[in-house]
Image 1 (cartoon, rainbow, N blue to C red):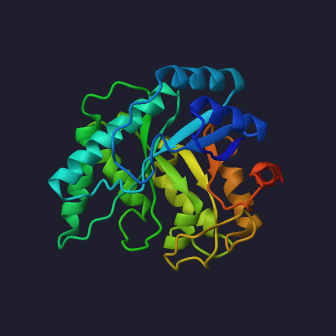
Image 2: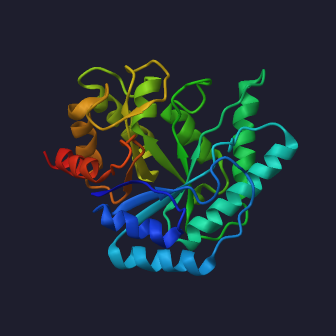
Length: 279
């Protein structure tokens, strides 16, 4: 299983990849630029190429994550323009680094007509992908329901991809904490069995390309996106065993976004995930 964690690129893309190897990870996630800004970044092409080559040599999978302000459903014309430019920039960096794709949240819309929000998402995806020729894909992530219920149902994600004219450039990133928080992943002992059946029926697994593996600090269905270390939250080890058995045979990056104590690393948690997957 390709397991890893989110890493800083403070010292460059290649150093992030080297850090992943030191943690005995074979996957990692990174912010391609300042996570608090939609500004376009001029990146070091040699560093990106070196990262790509290093990952190939060491069997490392990587994914990028869009900055926090990114909102596919945005209405404001200037902000929409900035969002499109930022996403194209993220895709270019991810492609140069050899990453699977760029994780982007589904989007939130606060207007009076929810349908307009979905239209905005599709139009934004079209504007970003209309002439994209790289291998990196946009990976739409399910949301937790905090502040908006948009993007909490698999049907929404699947339909948005289906309606996009450039669907070949779109995949999914499944976040376990978000799914649990939103109620998408039922809290009962057979909750994953129910969700797995739904995902298979919708064809969701056919385009699942990445996973955010996070436990939840809150009980399921409370719409609170607060991550906990694997096994220490309300999802718990047994639910993760059920989930990991399903995705174990899928060749995709599984990335931890969980908290660690100061001075510690994700290395023990990475090993725990592998143990749970095999038990």
